[in-house]
Length: 522
Image (cartoon, rainbow, N blue to C red):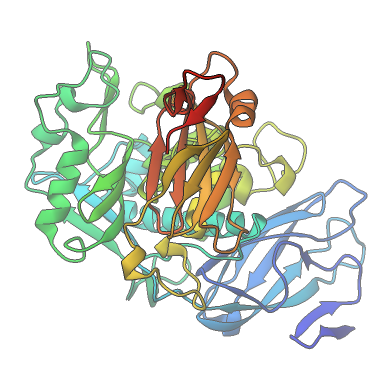
């Protein structure tokens, strides 16, 4: 028997074992093409493994199948723009003699954020490139090391980044805002069942004027133990130059995730490192850019159907031909984690996020698989959202994204032109640090030895133009007697203003008078 559960057309079978979506509300508005779903299905008091089949809206996208482990499931659901009716169909045969499937129909409304600047996906290709990546022999034989396959892998990674980030923004209370990908109407590779024409992420092939010799120069390899030659153009500059040579859309303000196709793990004597690879993010002029090498791309999924298998592939990395990056990529599922996750770390820098105490902007990308799977190799327990560990954006990074132009929701006005470059001013007033900013403060980051050790969150404050902080309390809480405190005042218009040394600034603001007592300069 099927019954309507509410007015927004959710249909759930009466059985308590029917699939239940936990992380998304029925009828909720989302802003990404691929939606991460977490839920429960089947009996919650027994050990079993089963599967859920997802049938997409009016069958515009092929059905996909996902693991159920001890009643927990995670899946990636394809959405069309507008209202989507999604079916979740549970296979009951592993736990019930009545093997009839149980079905839940769920509604989601996908509204693309077309008013926002996109994240562009780009692959840098050397002038004389062989257009292949490092890969194990079996993947070379199947052609999975070729450029067309790499394009599919980067497209899939982009949608995984988007699904992960949207979920993180929601968990932090900022709605399902997320960056959009630059998309076009072209042959889609997100499913291996039906590669028809769809609106899908565009992959810009940046055919550089730089040669293989220049890109693979050991003297500019980031992991070269003998150091980088500062006299030679580094890989980040090479990528920047190549984007500028390419032209639109990189001739205006843009955000780019750039993969270096020709990276190569060199096992020859006196080498033993990855040439043509750098993990860097930031930007200058009109381009914000995060770059990464292709040396781990062999382990990435090309399609949604491969996501779980790639994040669970326990094949040992053959270090005679493939990189064990950072000594943390000894199996293919770990290669997948670092390849996609560390690249996302650089995209985080592109979107202004600094290093953080935990999460993706630390080394939390080693747990990225836990976002998308309910089973991890060598782990006998289900991976629930509470056990995803490093697979998160640190709260201060999320606050930055909340006010980033790539994350703006349709009902939010764009930043005012007259406030675009307005930063914070600060001074000592009696025993207080006074911070003022007409563009509104969203966040104060607190550093010791160039590491963030804390932050003050003003994202919920309305029109926070002035903040007063008691200097002694900040020093006591974050610095103590010997630790110099650095502060960064982040405004809602993305400007950042640094106070390099709170203790010194406070002392230098004092004037000793010939009478008893102190006054403060202003």
